[in-house]
Length: 306
View 1 (spheres, rainbow, N blue to C red):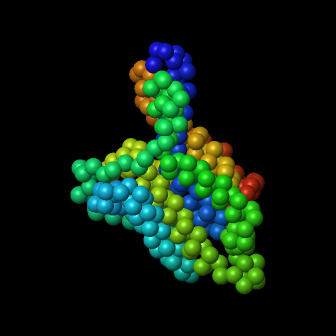
View 2: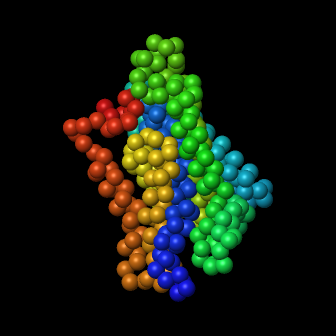
View 3: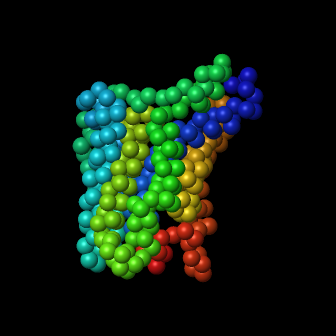
């Protein structure tokens, strides 16, 4: 790192931000899709963990990491369907159901994932965008996983969908007013269930990234609360998919700060920086909490706005 000097720290943070932000990005996009329909899903932490386990198991048994990603998306979608169907019942609180689904998802993942703690599954491929540099640290920082690029494209695709397509309009109408949606002949419960399914699929893919690339293994502590932090990220991004992309990089950079300092030889108190993403989450929640003003951009039917 001596040949880079002080540039070693921002380069390490950049590379770490790209790697760490990808699960945040997928889970936050799934939560944006769900919340724009008027439902909050706190169970995405459990969906993230079950996606990581299923993706790793299928990749190991099939030898294909991409089959693992598809299986993780299917598992996440199934959890989203269960969550959506339960929340469609009368007098059911979606926040309480989300917490229950989070516990169920992590419990199932830990139980069925025990045989896959030791086996090694194939990793997802990366694109070496740092090929032009002869400095190993730069090459490593710009070794970008394909799922990060897919997530970035998905953020802009969701933004375009909400802004210009009929599907996006339907989701926004249902999220803003159940009565208006029914007056238009829409079925809010069906739309919200489908949105929750799609959101769960995104979270499942984020889990597959964790187990199949970074850190690239399956264990019971793989998530570290990223699914819950993504909810704060969505509020911070004001329910805008493109803003979620930037916010995910910010959260990812915070999460990469401690390892980056350690990688450049800073060992004095570096472990305190491992708390950066949690401090950032707390700060975002405090900054966006107010009893006197509405949450700008929040769907009208979202329970946290009532």
